Image: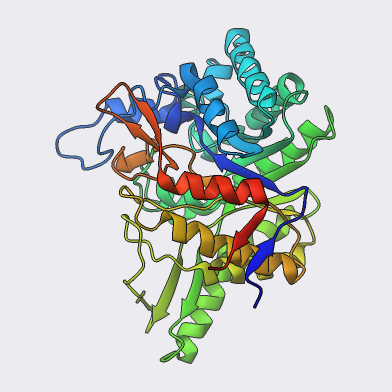
Length: 399
């Protein structure tokens, strides 16, 4: 085995963030409203986002950190509720703010992968039925077209929707996220609507520009115990892996210029129960398994489109595992490239500690610590220095 893996000269080394999780004061979206309506008898959300990381005002400081630590790309999102505060109103002030933000990133040598929908929606959209409304696809198409018209000169790639199946699961199956519904059939319908929304947004963007358009798809790898597997577990793992990728991605082929892969963990089945090793887990209890990333990359190769890892990271407040995590995951990436996988970039989640949705601020995913006790001070963790070296040398050492 090689003692290092070298990456292509054009490989993108980046970090990832999302608007609601870092900007602060997104007061016109469905998440903010849900946060403010919390009652004592309800567990989630654990806390409101409030000022989050104040990225809306401090983005230049954060892009300076990206530049200092040798990254050449960033994945971020715009907040739909800021851009379109009412169904018939587009806010030029908000649009111009994002343009200034994009220019600041580009001035620091950062390529921009822009996500149009990262879980949050305007309150007016939610009140019309959100993603289970009949006209949701048409509304999203118009929004995507406006974003293409306004931002295509600044960004290098569009990601239409982030983790559509996670959104459907959390919002419509287990009801943890707004609109807090528990209806499996409605969840299925929402997934179909999100497929249609991507296809329609893809077409709308392509009428404006030739910028690549993709989707960010969270994929959990389902595995079986190698020492005690059985036919039922192997069949269940195969079916769950199909639901995780082919079910959603196959209908979109021809309308995807690249695939964004969000990978966090593997689930190992034993007699149809989750039975993971517990020796290497994040603060959230997620089993860290680089082998699962390699398996998914091999499976995605059949789609014959470029792949970017658009999220990969772990909650690790003490930075105990993050350097090892990065090394192991990037070795899996290097091995995949050698085997013929068209992997073109890696975006670590996340640039900074942020608002982790219903869990609030306690999960610490950042290469940069946000000190919430001292004016949101930015403090790069030791693992970021490791990642900066990888980015600078375009290689990852095995040992």
